Image (cartoon, rainbow, N blue to C red):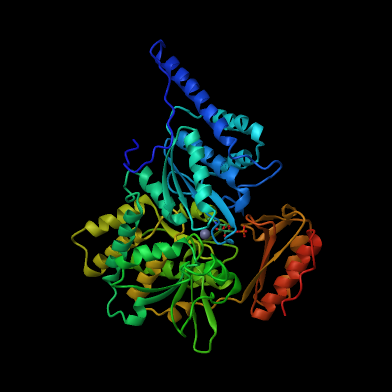
Length: 581
Ligand code: 16G
Ligand code: ZN
């Protein structure tokens, strides 16, 4: 039942009278087809207001569609239609988020959220691409194909949650999504300005009848902040320095949401918010992606030596930490360092609690070699490597009682299986525990509650990291010293067709073009502790190159040499890549 009082009824198609139909089955079929023709008439009427530019081809990439905002109106309308169909198919609420994350303000994008708050299932990504590229006159046929293939019951009333980031184009584009939903007679709730992970959270709450939490922004803050404050009860003697955090909001939605949330935690965490969107441009020389790729502090922040700082990206699903030492040297604590901090803390708690749960850390090829070595050899943890993109990491993390997944770029979260949660709860409820077990159970329980398990979430990750540092009495410098990153470099190369490069082994080896991997292997051999891989981007028309080695000079040289190999063997366009030094 769709009981939420705030739901805005956008449009609802009435089922036709069934009084004269004899059998129940016949009645249903008739209602379905009558209802369907009404719905198609509506779709037809509205789609002409959202025409597709002829010939434009776009693909549902790693995390949805993303391109210049001017090209996206028809995509948004059609994703509203697809979300309605997905909702009818799953008989659950589906989410649609309008954002282009860490990309420039001029861009925009859209992604679909499945019922449990996860990314939409891959076969439906295919439908998204098909619908997006159907010429105007073929749209109805494309929709009918999906309906037939998926055997969708069109009389089910679709329910869709919609959210958007702060881009100037987002309001109009999310309106187009809402029109798409209503054309199929669906109900929608427009959450307006929310972070991507907040929308994922809302969808999950709605479909689990509130078991995961309340499907509102206030419900989200209450759950996370209460858990954070309970965790902080275990932090003794926190100094003012430890309670202070400098935060770069990337001039995006994360900054607005930090402002909304911060009073709930102000007793334990004082946030100096920079790049709050009041003057600067979204993601411009700031934000998690800029800091990670450039390996330098964002503009718009005055960073004092030793101060603990973090950056969100434009839709607040990524976070990285950093500080600058007394010599002015910049130190980045990326997703790998975050995964290490969280998994070490969890492992200690499991031992104290006497719980035997299997835990793994899930990474991608971008994970710094030092982090993998530390996790496997020192922490004796299971480490798994997957393809780039949150959905891949999420999927593998689900195989374990506790799956800590992070991309090096700062996107990640922790997943707890139902049985792990039950065991923690049972332990917490057991009156016979000794003090150490009681403490560990309380910490584990509130760690579960502070985490947004639907998707990587900068706000939730920040609260968890801040709690861990406070509980352990650990400074950002001590955290950084857990292991030393191997110097690394990321480059990109433009090629005529990036699909000429195909990869295997979680993108760590190239299978095409023939002989290409041998060239990379030969280059890697020249440098100590070196590793390099190339992969076609899933979001941009480029080939990405990653290299790490014992020194920054060697990592840079290797990245350059591998870029040249890409340029020469995979059809580079434009000027040949130049050395970095
Ligand atoms: C998207 C992915 C991110 C991945 C990045 C890779 C999600 C929510 N986001 O931003 O996880 O790291 O793509 O981009 O899955 P690339 O394929 O262009 O390197
Ligand atoms: Zn993002």
